[in-house]
Amino acid sequence: MTDASGLRGKSVALIGAGNMGLALLEGWAAQDLLGAVSIVEPQPSQRLQELCAAQGYALNGAAAPCDAVVLAVKPQALDAGAAAAAPFVAGGAVVVSILAGKRIADLAARLPTQAVVRAMPNTPAAIGRGVTGAFASAATSAAQRGLSDALLSAVGGVEWVDDEALIDVVTAVSGSGPAYVFYFAECLAAAGAEAGLPAALAARLARATVEGAGELMRRQPETGPDELRRRVTSPGGTTAAALEVLEAPDGLAALMRRAVAAAKRRAGELSG
Image (cartoon, rainbow, N blue to C red; front, top):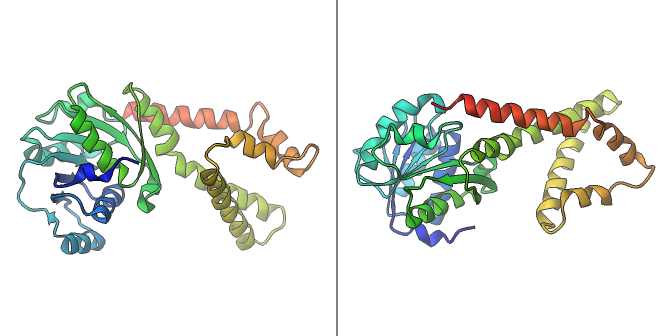
């Protein structure tokens, strides 16, 4: 994770404070290094209002040029979000966009800057365990990239890519990925109930299994998931029997390829 001291004394505007915007804001508040924070959110939640009051952040106040502007509105609200961001960008701020599908060109065409970072965090950012893929425009300076990295690192790891097209793939893998994991837990629980377990017990077992497996991967970063899978699979045993189904040509790998391709395709459709 990037050294958070890169945030010290910097001024930041957050445009849009829904779930992801609020997660970022809470990450910045925990580090308590920013010089000034301004938020534009037409429908502020109670949590947002309380956080702004506690931290002295400006909510829906007058705009002034900032060092960085984080654009966290929905992709369909880009025009309105860009209009709200423009006064904060006026001094040459770097714009960090977390809008799925919106290209650097889409953003630069609507804002008075070419220094744009396109980023895609995911929902575990809400507990500081997110991961974000990011790409910086050619006009983004090294200092601006560093500031962007520090802002995004407040909620988890940041992985930079050198081709903007890869952000759509990041969106399809890690941006949407938590939903795939949740759905897996849902399906595992349903299968357990269909096989005879009480539904509530099946749900608890599935949830705890996904939580524990994820934590095991986290604690053994040097061990790939393929090796962890092999360690729990005895030849001819119950796990091997199940994996024969999952590893079939039309099994889980094929489904994941189709799912990621569909999400990537949809990200492309959101551009413009």
